[in-house]
Length: 322
Image (cartoon, rainbow, N blue to C red; front, side, top):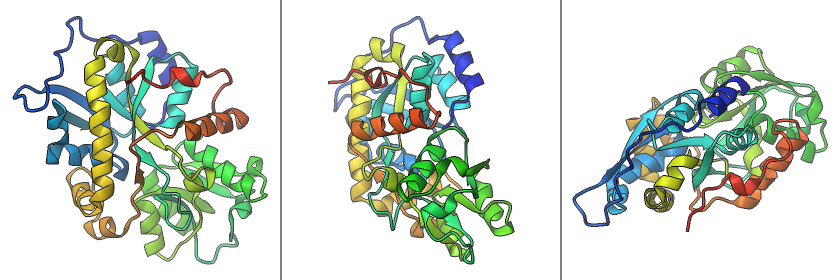
């Protein structure tokens, strides 16, 4: 999810919004009454636990009925949360740091996807043609590299991977492309490389492309890439619901980790991923806790590279939960 400067500026002006009436209290486990919450998500492998949790009853056990709605990114999800049209949304961490720097009243409440910690097998990778001269991350210096959004988490981690390998990250020529268009762009030479998330990294490899870097893991082996957020207003007015949602997500993430086959099956319910590719792609680490140290890494790198302004107070990024 990406929050561009114009979108964020508009959000600051609109404020939280929301309903005048207080939300219903969260029903306890075993109660027939459930609190309904809408959650904005993106049709990617990262949010599979959200769908699994609804299917297997984890949310119901925590007194919740979850209604996911799919969007392509923050341009739709964030305004819905701020206006009270949805209670929660899904975002990458850098976007939330950028939002905090501009005074957008959002709070991170639960972990989402994380780096696998295995540079040989992560759920996002830099792919190049089989005959490319790029053999290692440092070789990406001076090359055209496709990322889904400039000045966000992708260029932060790609730069850091090149930097760690002794290359010059300032010389990378980033090209903004949607993830579904990246494999074709690498194949026809429009770009030299692409930082692709699953399933597109696996699609590229299936067409003979090579993986030369795993920027999430190579930036931080425990990197929290994304998570679920709410508005500051909703968190203040509905602490029990927010806590119930956070607890349910943690349980769902653990369930997904222990049942990868079910994760691969549920992908077909909300994405267009080919079932054969779904069986081959690398799943993210479904973290049960936000790795705060890695969030600080993203903040420091974002400031260093000019992606995030200075002065962000990390404590304001996180919701105040038990």
